[in-house]
Length: 544
Image 1 (spheres, one colour):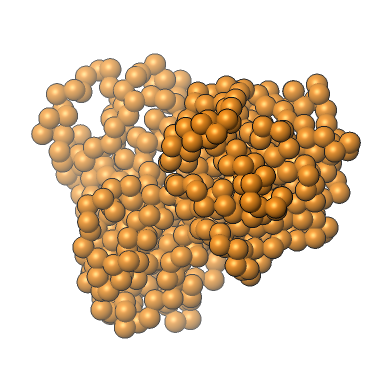
Image 2 (tube, helix red, strand yellow):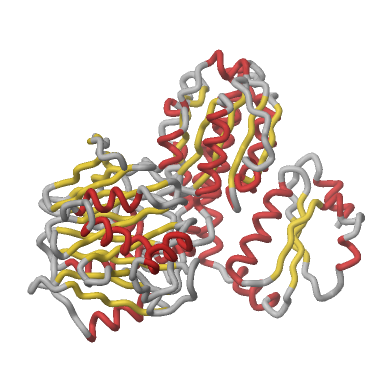
């Protein structure tokens, strides 16, 4: 997923944009670039293939002073990773530049048309189509009105896109547009300066006052503020929000990697997840933002959980929680598959989406399918004010703080806690959870942050995991086994090993080993067994 950062104000724009892009490295990328309006009114472009450090070296070697800039990290879709395909892309006269996150699905049709009209392309990307369309509309029928030209160009695009446009003939503004679900577009408010970015961490060092753009919305951003409108040009008012994250939470601090930092933050993050939700006076769960009326909870016939990746495995754990405590049937679906199988959706159904970012395209599409079917929709989401939280009937925030590492850690454990809170809440509303059991669960939840923190401190002070890594790093295949509620944990463990070490690993239900997989087990395949002392512990031990 690409990253976008823009700044307009009175300060030096280059370091602000580069720092913002660095905060978006977790999204993945293969090239980076930026456009800066220098103090002489010239538009300067710097682009490099590979790591952001390459762009930083280029900017250091060829510095540009200016107070307006847009930057971009690209993950190749159309055209291979290269300097020529890196963003920003510029118009034939060199005046207009565009950065984009998303895909122009009809770019071949548009490219062929533009080439037939004399436009020449300098890259293989679909993004270059956008800047040529803006240039064409700007000079033909828009009376040199940049906003109108962008509106008309965006109106020709098919597929999800988030774009930021700058024109050196209009040095006092940036223009942003969002179509569909191509990732977030966050507008940040400063003192006589403004920001725009794909995600909150990019601008968190400078402001916590933000507005989130929705599908088919545009913004004209100046030093003094932002004017919002829809793609048709009708004025809009967007709610300004205060984000409760701080800049330090998005930095690595003394840790070598973001993921390492986020692992060790779990004691604190779980405290934040639980804060204000355990009502010991009444032994109840407080989930005010869920907005689920008691009669709706009591009438539920089915709960469907939709998610991707790690969040999907959290959902599998949630299935155990909800079915056991709330006694309602639960189905867990990959969000990317859900909408393509014509799911049966009804008003007596609750569809819960789990997404750290709140901007996962497949998850948002699954939510739209559920809303269209009349289901009550809820999001378990980490990013405050993200689209998933905004489009659902209710939401439960993870409150895990920024998660920068690509492989989810604290957001996964926060998801599990939120799912247990939801299960207890539903069980109490539906009358299926005895009061004594609810009180016991609340007490145990209150102990969780301390237990997690102590476990992590022991791990940090010892060398057990280093010893295990040194012993097992020579192997190329791993098997993770679990049973019951521990099976999804085995799946998550296998995913983590794949993501972090690039070692092949598979998770499997222990009870299914005899049905084929055992044939592959030999001395070259270490097996990791998740075996807690629960009701399936004896069976697990006998199978191992």
